[in-house]
Length: 182
Image 1 (cartoon, rainbow, N blue to C red):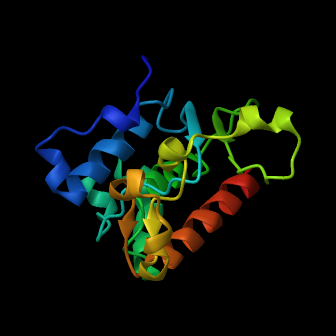
Image 2 (cartoon, rainbow, N blue to C red):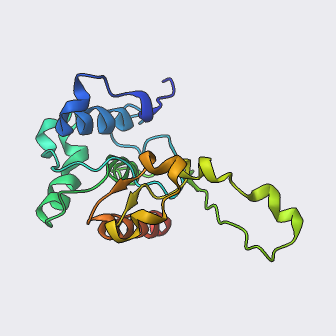
């Protein structure tokens, strides 16, 4: 099986429908499984970005392998409807299959980028991200009360929303969940 980059798998006509996006993305994760009974080969490269947030989750019957997506029905019934597609992909990848392999096949690399303090040594300078490129790694949702702090050169890269705190909490919960997964 060949590699799949989930970031580029959604067609333009699908991008207008959150169910079509979910179907494409989660079915692509399933295509990375040696068989439906195994975990997929999945590499998640994570930063502080949360991902596109959809307003609804599709029932498991809408996927190519509904049995692999039963967890999404439980997730939706918990009242969680607004969650990022990135979160759904990560959660889907770590769902325990019928057969666990002796070697892991799901990996996450979490890159955290912290701005060095002004009083840190010069050798830390190499870790700094230029201000106008910071948005590539930053959490992309901003509370309206914080909007004035967004640098002018990158203000269009952030979405101002009252739900920023909720999304940030979800991102942190997702990271904890991924770290605790078997």
